[in-house]
Image 1 (tube, helix red, strand yellow):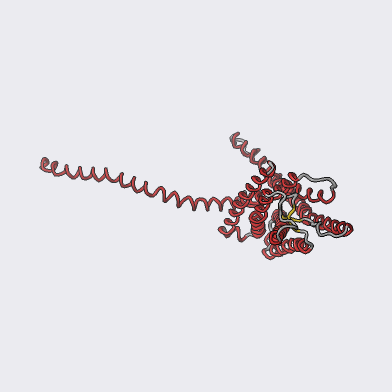
Image 2 (cartoon, helix red, strand yellow; image 1 turned 180 degrees about the vertical axis):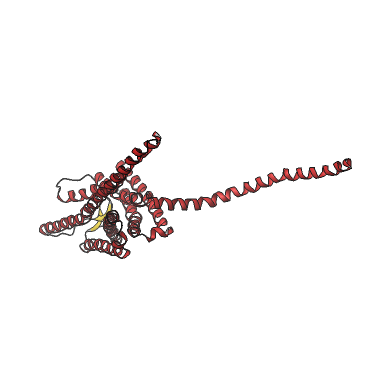
Amino acid sequence: MHTADVAACVLVSCIIAVSLLSNVVVLICFLYDPEIRGQVPGIFTLNLTLCNLLLSASNMPLTVAGLVTRGHGPGPGGPPTAAAFCQLAGFLDTFLVTNAMLTMAALSVDRWVAVVFPLSYHSRVRRRDAAIALAYTWTHSLCFSAAAARLSWLGYHRLYASCTLCQDEAGDGARAKAGAAKAQFAAFTVALHALTFLLTLVVMCATYLKVLRVARSHCRRIDVITMQTLVLLVDIHPSVRQRCLDEQKRRRQRATKKISTFIGTFVLCFSPYVITRILELFYPGPISPHWAVLSKCLAYSKAATDPFVYSLLRHQYRKTCGLLANKILKRNLFNSSSAPWVENNSSRGRPHVQKTTAANEELPSITPSVQ
């Protein structure tokens, strides 16, 4: 194995471990807390979590296996069972990634409605609306995945060392048919990425920038009230005034950091892979396999960052994780500290008993002398 392949194997293995652990924690929080289950965004978060879990359990281990057996993937000349299994994995890869992207777009629309229309949010976004949105994401993803499977455009791609969208040119008889099939595959690939990656990016930018604008206007109003209060409070301590100003500065930066995290992680993780897939269709020269594998690893890393970006860094999920941790640790601490507590109480009681008995023994000797 090449050194770069070894590093890629280690990287994908770390992504699998972090993704499985973090997404399982999100799923446990969802099942444990009824308040999270009762919220409309919880439905989108559950769908995103399940997609990331299935991707981490099915396609990522196959990529590690493809890196270990580099160049010996289940191609058209391999066993039919391995080729069929790889086509199923490619179907899951296309379906899960597309579904996850569209779910992120749905989450951005939900947050836009919650910030721009806070008073009428519950009447505008209901569980039925969330179910309709999820039905669209599933239908959208199934259509592209089923079309790729019907046209035999799923299999082992040696450039990415994974089972994904690819074109098999071995069965093309004539050069004209091969050129027509290549043009169809290029059109399908461009349409897939335009209606998933580009559509999600446009929706996220439009909604989150509107959310940022509203958040900044709210911060300006709060800042005016804060400054007026500080002017009126002449005798306020300088440290208290400085804390108010620091909180004012953090309030301005909080919304910008969150929105930059939402859009930045999406672009950083998915854009290298999408650009490489488009470049593969039209660039005449060869593409480095190490760069192709790295772009695929970056796309996989989105499954490990999503639990933190959309769930675990929020106050409600942190509170639920804290409750679960305290519930687990309390039992262990109680079991470990119960025995020393009993011993300490028993040892504390012994001198008291001895002292009492000694005092009682002295009473008979004192009583006759008094008499």
